[in-house]
Length: 452
Image (cartoon, rainbow, N blue to C red; front, side, top):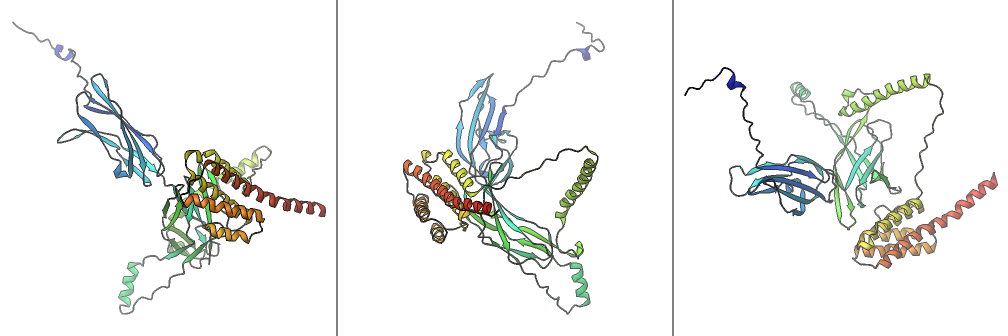
């Protein structure tokens, strides 16, 4: 039998399609419920994968290496679909430290000994864990010699906590530049036997916490922001770079836990207007961004001037910035928010009494103008006796604050009725204080009207 192969026939003949083979293991889902958690909060990690039926595999998680604690692990019942087994896992995680982490959450590995046990690896994911409290040193640096230097601490709270210890003083140490090795060599060559004359270091800049200030919390994007003002004991007299070393602050959680927060070193730059920048031993890279902003403002101002010059007259809108709320309004708002949380019905008496007493403390300090920052109950009660305050209110406060301390620190568990009564007492202290000050204001307004 003779077979003939015609030219071009073999090339044009259809080739059989290669079969599509799925991998032994395929990860179908790997995601977090949130990628921006707060320390101590919980989040969920969802893992779903399928494998060839009968293949023995199991997931291996990489959470502990990233500071994540597995609170709960759930393995849902496997499902079979087209000869493959679909498995789902859910992990409840708690981040224990802040930071940004990029890692592969899990991998699928074969059971038993294998040369390469890894069957599949989940794609890398990024978690940005925020701390409960962020503290930032804010100043008007850079300043010129002769300008007043200002400094404050900006505290951002992402959970209801109380600042229990703030630094009473901060010190900014002068940062001397490293000596020029070339000049040292030249000096050694010329005067090898003469030791270099030490340069006296300028005095450190000392800042003291202003105890007379009234800290008013502000709600910004769901976070509580507080600012603490510091007073400078003496303005800088020498230009250069000053550094506030690392320090710690302490805050108290709703559960009564004391936590320390580390604040990184902060630079303060003082410039001399009569000295070239090259002669000042500081790093001026921070001026690049302000220079760009200044140039943009200059161009924007020019365009705005041309627009205003040639546009048609139009009524000018006046921007009115509302004044800060009075202490009474702030206290009523905070107490209403605490009531809406229904903490006593949840058994969270300690947190409830902490929030109510802190609100009353802040109100008393703002309304009667005496310091309450980092003051114990005994110190506040002593200060109250010297205030121009009715005796009835003094008695109410003297009963209210110690009762709250019993629940906060003595592990005393009150009843729901007692919890309701504490809220009533807090509102009574606020309302009677406002009523006590109201007649004085009305009398002053009447006197002014009569004089006019």
